[in-house]
Amino acid sequence: MPGLSLNLCLSRLRGQLGHIAFGPAEDWCVTRFDSNDETLEVYWSEPNAPYYRTSESQNGPGGGTRGWGGHAEMQMIRDFPNTTNLHGAPYLVEIFISRSPCSRSPQFNVAGHNYPVGCGKKILELVKQNPNVSVWKVVYDSVFNGSRNAPDPQATAQAEHMINILNRHPRVEALLWNEYQRRLV
Ligand SMILES: [Zn+2]
Image 1 (cartoon, rainbow, N blue to C red):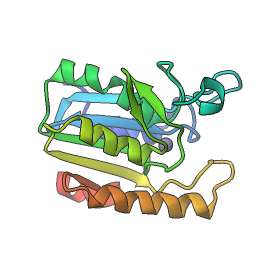
Image 2: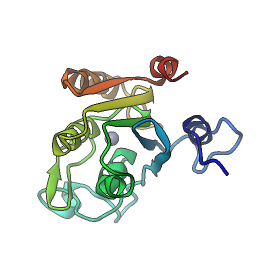
Image 3: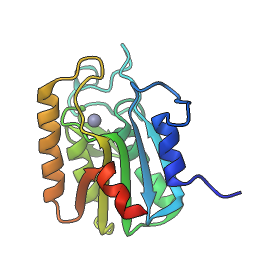
Image 4: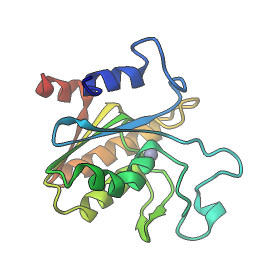
């Protein structure tokens, strides 16, 4: 039986097939190595429920050190060493996310290494930590706009700034799914 294709995977995450695991309030993140669908990995955001926060306020300086919680990109970054072990060191990493990387998620620590505030900067740190990956594509369905319950223009402006910062990195390109999809067909 053939494995899950990228398009089917993203359709399921978007709820386009009539089913969605947690409703549209959850963000997701998918990675694929070297355009090979057999390397697809899927992550979800994990809500910061009371007493389950990953923030600096609850975990002291340096932010959360526990192995779970936070934005979907954070789950992906935590798992990245396992993913490269499993699939081998890639030339190209594609990161598909429901919304573009934020500028506000708390800093956190993975295997003794600190990742700064904001998922955009965390991704840049991941890029820096993996110098052998030549090309990174950060592909988002829409621009981050803050809390789903209370979208705010400031979060959007910061997210757009984050997209610009990502695009300034010579090995990174950040763009909308609608733009990227044309290259895949
Ligand atoms: Zn984030």
